[in-house]
Image (cartoon, rainbow, N blue to C red; front, side):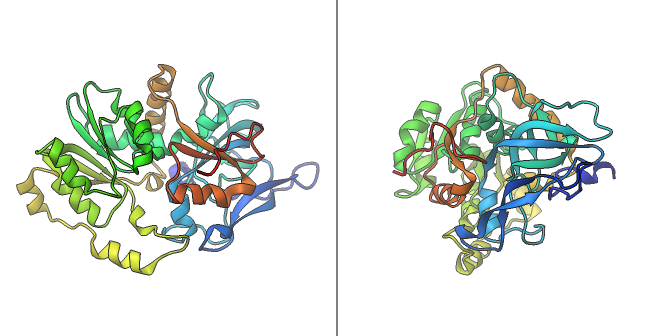
Length: 374
């Protein structure tokens, strides 16, 4: 047992409760790889939590770029179809299994897992749950784990971000980008370059990006060089392909590129073999001797492969909760969509219309806070 269970795929184990059958709940299920229509609302039967587990009534779930890639079948290590996607959610503990000492019914928790969280009710190992701080909404709690842990570990654990340095953040208006901007602001005098389409530049400036760059109409590397001829100290690279190479060449001596995604693979609703071939063909490659001459670092980060690093992840999340309590970070919610609107929510994210986090909730939002399509 031990650490094997961390960030497990959560498939609500079907166990009959003492009163017979467990009640049904709604879940989002990936029925096959492909377009938006492959994620369907279905009813599932949960069960009581096993030893070391909690049952949680889910109030909000985070949508991540990784979920979009998962839907297209672009990930290895996926559970067999059909399965529930969802890497993060927040809700209230409704039942506690044996051997759980530090959680009780009524606790508000956020949850991190490899998959399985887009459901009204989930059974999860208690070690994958984290108590929500006072005053945090369920939407904020569902927006925190994946994006903020990713941004924090990239900037501080790999990036070693220090005062007076500069950072290039791609997709700066997205979930990780928004988190990274807020975290950069916790360090003195950090200069932020952020790529995003022009319509998002005002909001990026407000949030602390000194130099927003429209990657659609200009060469972002040239723009960075105009302002900072020597380049930058850290590049956060969620793009992959030839952009990792551009990132490496934009680094100052002792600079670091941290690659954490391959969003260049995403060109449409379905897997695009041409884009895949092109991305892999252009994939940045460098050997150790070349690195030595350049005085630069290349790092790779994938939260999904931290399954067993439970203590490491918990430590980071506790630091983030502390920053939240100090008012230094606050998840920015772009829009809230019900489970029934999941296709629209994924489209909204894939077309990069969001500024901040896209949230899914089991029921339609009461105040219809979902933004109108623009």
